[in-house]
Image (cartoon, rainbow, N blue to C red):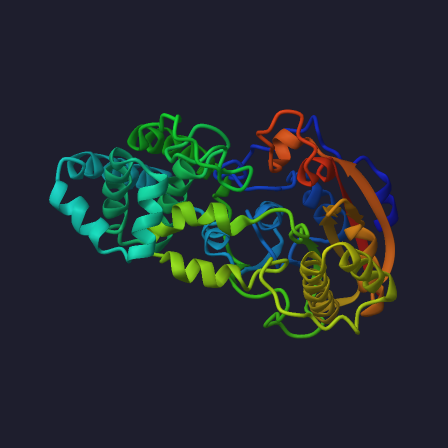
Length: 415
């Protein structure tokens, strides 16, 4: 059955992807929900347990929830966890709407209370305050501080998490937005001093209404859905307990989620210094020592050595990514039941002009830890919907532009 799935059209360019809670919050490199749905529907039955050890925006977990499967999602990114939890938590629509309106009205009053706003801003540490001053105009700071002060008073943890998701979506947007960053949801932030930020309170009201409408699709029980902080390289799960894995690992040296996510997280109590430290633990992080590559297959080692001849520092980044992904694949093999599948959606990278066939290298690594490779399907990216990083330079020939037009769906089997 898995080979047949990999042979079908997996582009889904003409499919609607904004149903249920999928469109609540922008997220870079988010795959279409039809992709995990195809594998979940065909390879599992109701009650089976789906794992996504790097949940990102939670697409796999949402689909598992909608299809009546149990699901476990892990991530080390605070915003990813917040988004995923909100997207699979059924709430009373009327209650959420009432709380949201109360937050908005309270924020409108707080905007006029300069002392309350300044107390909040003064409570931030120096680095965090400097970051906010650099990226947000004083007027916007007042609006966002007023909103977050109102959100902090929400007593229900689930409703507060939902409202914080709405708040974050005001800041991290595909276009426009309330910061001075350009196209924040797509790429690494670039400051645009000519930009006129939108009114945060107006944006919050609009995005709240849209998200509340999506709550109707989550009326099913959340029973059997677990989303928590965890590292895909060290899963706190028993052996042979998962029926299907569907996940999209980070691109090697391409998308820096943390740089965008901190724009909203600093408003929600995450100090900039803590986020910077956390970023150093991400898979594929650029900050690394000298990774031990002896356990990697020869093909992977060869690509690292070829890159090292051009750029030793970039070779360390690639080596760290591949070593990290070997730990991930070992864990996936361990927790997956026998005769079950793991699906990985990955893309190639370009480093110093050298194309890195990530899908081929991860296939080799997967086989080296015990998996049987069933196949690898190529899918063309709809760059606007996949929300890939975009260049703002005319006639750009950057590596990030050149490499992100396709990705690959790897099918592994545990025999």
